[in-house]
Image (tube, rainbow, N blue to C red; front, side, top):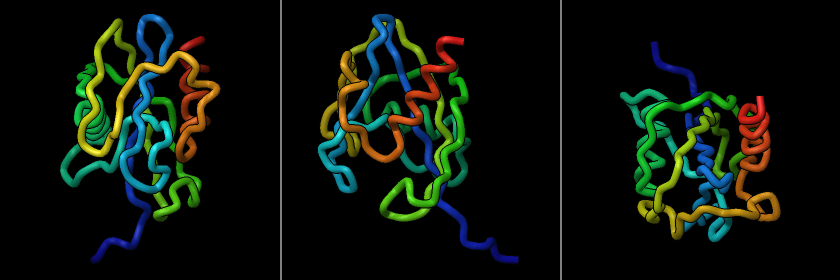
Length: 136
């Protein structure tokens, strides 16, 4: 039996450092080219969502993390203008690290005033949910 058509599976990673700054990338490609976004991307065949999250984080920022905390699942059909995606979002904390942009990130940086920035996709909601977990 063939699989039915389904949304593409993606992952996003919310990373805070010891100073409370948020790790964001600048998107190199459309959609939202040039906008801030969480590191993330498509989960590959044969990998877990967690490993996909770690891989995407490493490819886009050079950072490696161990433990991930589930933030939530984001599946609104219009969250990505390219088509229906379902993202599993995780949170990770690092004391300090120096991100280096790679893969499809034009830049990777710690952002102090991230609440004031325009964010791609539904990343503002994901970050708000991650903050709630951080406080609890």
